[in-house]
Image 1 (cartoon, rainbow, N blue to C red):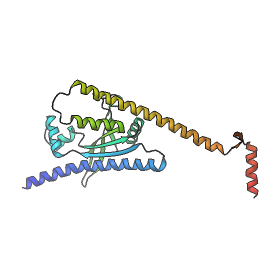
Image 2 (cartoon, one colour):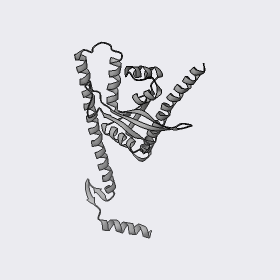
Image 3 (cartoon, one colour):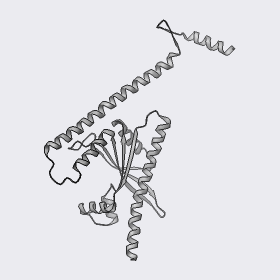
Image 4 (cartoon, rainbow, N blue to C red):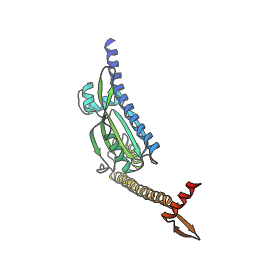
Length: 244
């Protein structure tokens, strides 16, 4: 009975360590979202989703890898016990968030897989990072790995449906269906490019209009004709207001 209690405490402590790492990383992401909300007109982070593998899932994976069934072995061989998915609007946002995480002095990027520049054969796209997060326990500090997946809304939509379609599919998938799935991934990638182009064009128009508004106060319009107000006249107006 005492041995069972000791094992239960160990596995609870082990899982809590990953939960704390996930909580810490989510807090960092929330701070970035708040910063963009207050300082910029645009927030690159649409939403986040986190998950912890169950002990059963961890054991199954360590057995598939044919590794020792021990806590040190699990930590060394399974890097995605804790996972965080960040969904963005545009592809450029993915790399912006990647840079933000790399600039966090207490985080360490130990692995990076860019499935956007190099999609998987089935069409899957996403940026995967393995991030070491410091966790401060009551008696020690631990560096805990968290897998971070950063993808656009279109990438996430495709990946979620692909997983549902083939989840626990034990037979060989017909080539026709694989080809259609790859075509759908290509369509999602094309949509990402189109929406980013529209976003950039609208941003340019907005910036142009803002610049026009700044200079608009130095122009007057009479009978649909625009006249520039000379700087000397503006100085005279300012001087007159100063004498009032």
